[in-house]
Length: 186
Image (cartoon, rainbow, N blue to C red; front, side, top):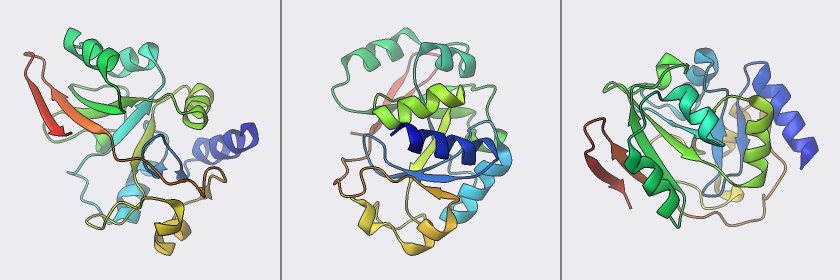
């Protein structure tokens, strides 16, 4: 695994995009602070830049670097969640502008899956995570279902967990600064 973390990190550091396993589904990712790399993912997925993508983080320090004001309910949701949960929060900073949604929000998920966690430790920056499919197509449930177009379009394919069936996409909960909570996906 350490070798795969090193290879993925080297690609990301140079502005490349990777195809990698998460604790939910296979993802396409890059350095979330690099707008050119983010643009490559939008182009590969044939996705409008107004449909923002999420970022993975590995702990509080990274979260506070991107979000200044985090509602208390966010910590409660993260503590109580039994499955991977993405929180959409207001006013991100220190992030590629083309990742920020038109309503000035960004989705983030704290990751515990070992490969992603180690990669984030090495990067010291958030990692973009979006499902490994062309926009509008079904989300692949395993590596074999990922289209050749996606595989050829990335700069590196992580050679881990390619036989494993993936889980379901994460739950998505939107929290606003005025403490409104809206469940987007259960």
